[in-house]
Image 1 (cartoon, rainbow over the protein chains, first blue to last red):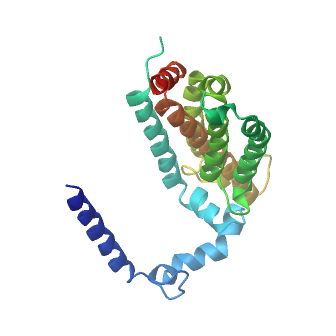
Image 2: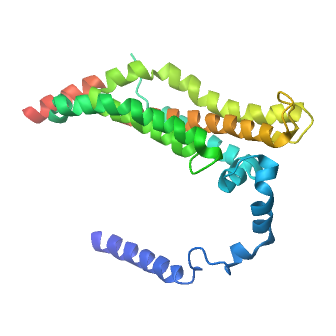
Length: 91
Length: 155
């Protein structure tokens, strides 16, 4: 049983490493995600539109604010689920 | 109480370090607008500070700092701050989370959205730190269970 589990892990890990070879290099300007026109828009306009110098924060909290609200709700829900399942009764 | 918890060196170092960790966490949250950082990271650092304190000083001492009631209230407060900021923008005629429509102190729209982004980051930070701490409290054995366990080990 342990050998089967080890084989499954090695197989899955090997597949991930094999697929990882096709990823674009880190910071490659010619990769599809860096070629998209929205990148230029964020770099040129994020500071004047949202007032924050950090583009990551501008995208996270302003352009994708709704998404981040969902992420916060996910963390809150996970915490509440653990609370319901694991919290001991206080006598 | 295990050996680590009785060590004077560790207790003193933790007592000195925790305030600095918490200040660093607040810095990371407030610095999110202009550099690396933000609500998620800062909240986790803040929670880790309190978890470190609780690991050394015991669950009972930690619960005095962050009681179950307080964590219940705060965890929903953080999310409400975020959603409330979004609704505030709708009240002033914008879309949900469209920060620059709020006429805050008659600042220009970019500055208003900067301030509201900071408010949102604080909301994220509160939720993350409280959930971190309550997860730690929920999966750690209570004080009496810990005593029983250590007695069983001794026997």
